[in-house]
Length: 265
Ligand SMILES: Nc1ncnc2c1ncn2[C@@H]1O[C@H](COP(=O)(O)OP(=O)(O)OP(=O)(O)O)[C@@H](O)[C@H]1O
Image (cartoon, rainbow, N blue to C red):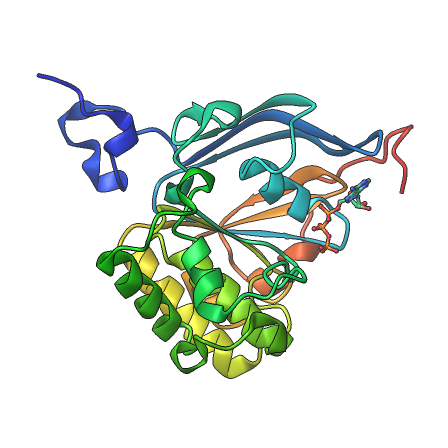
């Protein structure tokens, strides 16, 4: 019997035949140094395909740094991150990953329409100049409908409100139908109605086996989707478990971390 190619295996249910399905995310002994300071220290984390994980913690605890390192935007000072079994520096299948950054970067001073920004989620750097296929256009339309922005597709992103821009970024992350969604405070500054729209879009993806990592201070309507919470404190994981009372997890520290000499607050 031949083993399936791990890179084509999707979702935990594809483990039939005994072949080991790679974890969606594996973080081993990860430390990250920013500006000469260890912002993450000794992080160990494994996320199975299909899991929906909330990353919680106080301001400055390292949440954004963790997810930015997971998607390859920051290098590890020590340790390793693997995506679907491949070390991030060698990972090339970025269409399998959807990422919504914490702050608006879509406009970035570049005049781009809503549809253009969402389309950019379909294109790897090497394929920028290829015309979009009919399937690609349909995916962009579907994604814009999911976040209720279809009627703004020709508008300049820079002219949208902050919450509307955030919806465009969410549509951009969803458009390639990624297997792993990494969302850094996706609904910060987004009104409740839009949060509901967003939660519906994520719920639909989760039902199809998409893995989700979401940084949030206020999960809102997403709360019911979470099946595991991780709490960071000063660059370390201090809680990893069921998301009971998730609104207060940021204050749960079952394994208190002693302040260490040399830790700069
Ligand atoms: N470029 C940088 N250079 C140096 N230190 C940085 C840099 N970016 C972030 N930090 C520091 O790293 C720590 C973790 O920051 P990070 O943005 O990961 O926290 P966070 O948990 O996402 O916070 P928040 O909830 O406020 O978004 C903070 O103390 C921050 O000051």
